[in-house]
Length: 269
Image: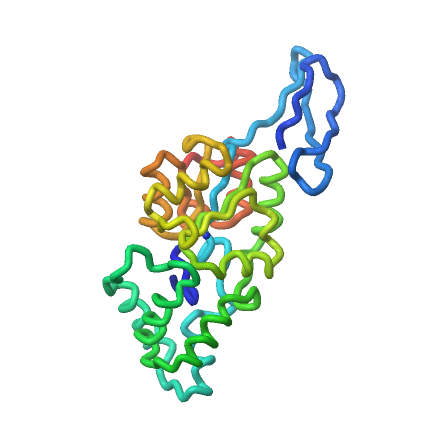
């Protein structure tokens, strides 16, 4: 999903097959000790359950993060002291108009994204007061405006601890990294790929390629989860990355973890 205000960014243990005990070792680059459980096979060798994918790429707005209230309601509430009379329904309609309008620059989100968001806020609300714009802009720059999807943090930790690399891939501006730090989830990820930093927006293949390069995985070894049919699903799959559409192919991050770590228990999709 595109960023908006916010409508729109271990290595496995090697062990001998002769080992007949559980192998305990720190996983490289992880902040804490992890246990990797090895099971015996019928030949008295050791095997490990292998995740279905080596990397998970995650969209931000509308997938990993959602706003604490409906976006249009937040705009309307923040606008009260500026005399804003536009209703939440009118604001939603205005945002659809803003995003449908041609944008003269190659990217909507460059640097801090202010030029595009100033246009979008004025179009959606009918208010061009600079102080109002700054209130709205700064509100969505803080973690208090957002919440992490239910169960996401626990599921991502489980996936990461199984040796799967994690990356954010988001159409967003320079506010994304501070927001992730405010929410205390920034360190969960091996890579944070933000469109405003690399100069490409989903569905461009370059933004997905940047994630694969940083994680050092091939497209066929990765799966992407996002909520947009074009930007996320079509964009990832054009590069050969498996993609699950949020709330359609997968309903929760617990299901994402299950499909990666226990794929045989789920129907293929």
